Amino acid sequence: MQGQEQARMWGGRFEKSPAPEAEAFAHSLPTDMRLWRQDIQVSLAYARMLGIRGIISHQEANLLVEGLLEIAQEIEKGLWQPDPSAEDIHTAIENRLYEKVGALAGKLHTARSRNDQVATDTRLYLKQYINGLAGNLIGLVGTLIELAKQHTETLMPGLTHQQHAQPVSLAHHLMAHAWAFMRDLERLADSVLRVKVCPLGSGALAGASFPIDRELLANELELDEPAPNSMDAVSDRDFVAEHLFLCALLMVHLSRLAQELILWSTPEYGFVELDDAYTTGSSLMPQKKNPDIAELIRGRSALAIGNLTAMLTLLKGLPLTYHRDLQDDKTLLFATNDFVLPAVRLMKQMLETARWHTERMRQALQGDFSTATELADYLVRKGMPFREAHHLVGQIVRDCLQQGKTLETLTLSDLKRHSPLFEEDALQAVQPEAALHARTTYGGTAPEAVQHQIELATHRLEYLHLLLSELLH
Ligand code: ARG
Image (cartoon, helix red, strand yellow):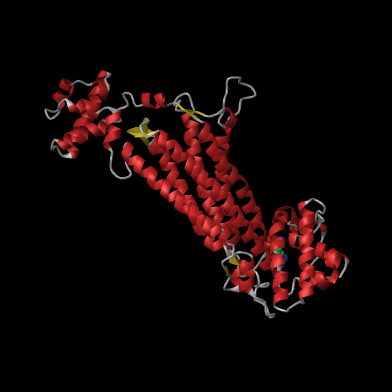
C-alpha cells in the first residue's frame, strides 16, 4: 500500500478523498498527539501477543516491536514529527511503521480497530494522570492538616447565612475543607477500578475471529481485566464522564475555599494575607494586590462543570457502539485535567505561604453575640427548658443592642435582672474561649475534639495513600 491509500487506513473503498474542509473538521491529531506513548505501548503489547499466539510469526512480531520502539525514540528525541495531515495519532504511528518495516506494518492491525485502540489509550493515559493528581491531592490535604495542627486554639467566627453564628477554631474550619478533599481522594481511588479495564481485543465492536489473548493484553498493559463485552468496550466512556464529575466536584471544593480566601483577604475581613507570589497588581491602581489565582481557580470550576455537562450530553443520545462523536471525549478530558492539577498544586502553595491574621479573627468575635447560645445552654443546665432559655437570651441580646452593650461586658446584676438562675460563672461562659472549649463532642470544635479529628484524618490519608499506590502500582 502506498500514497493516499496508506495515509488513510480505510482508503480502498473510496473513489475520492474527503473534502479538505471535511478532513480538517474530522482531524484529531492536535488533540490526540499527546496519547502517543500510550498508543505505542498498546501496539507493543498487541504485536507481542500476535506473535505469542502464532497469528504472526515471532520474527514478524520482533520486527514490529523494534519498529515501534524506534518510533518512540524518534518522538522522544524530537527526531520525527507526525505528518500534521494524519487523521489521528493511530494513523500517524502506523504510517511511520510502514516507513520502517514496510508492508509488515499492515499485520499489526489484524483483528484490531482504532475503536478498541483509542479506548485503551485513553484508559492508560487516565490511569497515569490519576496517579499524579492523587499525589497532589494528598499533598493538599496534608497541608490543611499541618495548618490545622497550628490553629486548634485560634478563634474565629463560624458563620451560617454569612452571619456570625458560633465561635470555631481556624483548625476546625480548615479541617472541614480537608474532609471534602479527602472524599475527592476516595472517589478518585474508587474510580481507578473502572478505569483499569482493557478494551483491547474487542475489535471494531464484535470481537475477533483470530485466537487473540485478551488476558495477556490486559496483563501486559497493567490493567485489571479485559472488558467483558466487546460492544460495551468500544462505546463505554463512563470512565471519562466519571472522572470529569469527580474533577468538577473537586474544582467546586477548591472554588469554595478560594472564595473564602478571597473574602478573608479583603480589608473588611483582614483574616489572611496571600503571598505576593499568588497575587497580582493593577495596571492602574498602584496600591492593589489582587487574589487572581484564587479567582481563576474559582472561575475554572465553571469550565470543569461545563466539560462534564458536555461529556454527558455527548453520550446521552448515542446508540451502541462507536460513533465519531466519541472522539471529542479527549478534548474535554485533557482540557479539564490540564487545569485541575495546577489548581490543586497552587491551592496548596497559597495555603502554605499565606499569613494568617489570628488577632483579627479574634477581634471579629468581639461583641458579635456569637456566644448567645452558650448563655441559653447555661440556663438549660440550671433546669430551664431550651425554648424558654432561647427566648430569654433573645431578650438579653435585644437589650444589649438597645443599650450599646455586648454579652462579654454584661455584669452579673445585668444578667440577674433577666433570670435569678445566673451566677458568677455565666460571665465566663459568654467568653468565646469558653464557648470553643465547651464543644467537646465528636466532630466538635473544641481543641481536643479537633485534635482527635486531625488524628483520624491523618490515618485516613495514610490509608488512602496506600490504597492508591496499590491500585496504581
Ligand atoms: N480519532 C478517533 C477517536 O478518537 C479514533 C477512532 C476512530 N475510529 C473510527 N472508526 N473512525 O475516537
